[in-house]
Amino acid sequence: MTLKQQRSSTLGIRVTKWWRGRLGLEGTLGYAPSRLRSSQYGFAYPAHVLTVSAKALLHVTPPAARASLHVGGGVGFIGHGGDAYPPWYVGPAAFLGGIANGGASIKLTRWMAVRFDAEDFVYSARVGGCTRTGASQPGACDIWNTYLLTGIIATPTGSVVQNDLVLSLGLALVEVH
Image (cartoon, rainbow, N blue to C red):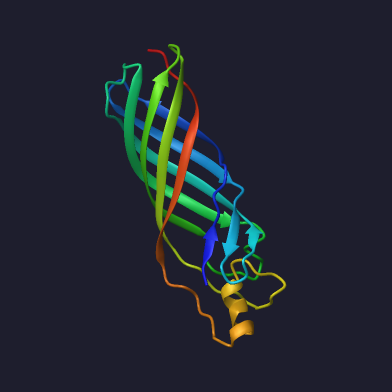
């Protein structure tokens, strides 16, 4: 049995500070109203994913160029919530990991650019325990509900490396020097 977070649009914000050289710092916050899909029951339960990151950035191309490329890395926080995680789910729903970033921007004017980024949140996650079973509220507790159907005792899953890929496209206000 597997649980899988479904693809979704993400709403978010990023704040970036570039210094006069090639280095910068950035913080991001994203919210994705995603669904959690169960292979056991074939249902997708309401859920959401919250991402927060802090990272260092490096311009790969000259910062003054009209089109520029950048890479970065840092620390990311991933939180899962929503109806798919009922109150009796006592396992972990928040994880800390690393983040790798690659992106590009094209200046439209002296003070505005179009920016595209691909961020990969990498973390070790597992599904934890539930304090009760019951087919009336599946979701993250599906592995406990399996016991009712099969008689096989369900236990928390081991940690597995997860990747949450966030693609973003937006307008950026550029600091004019």
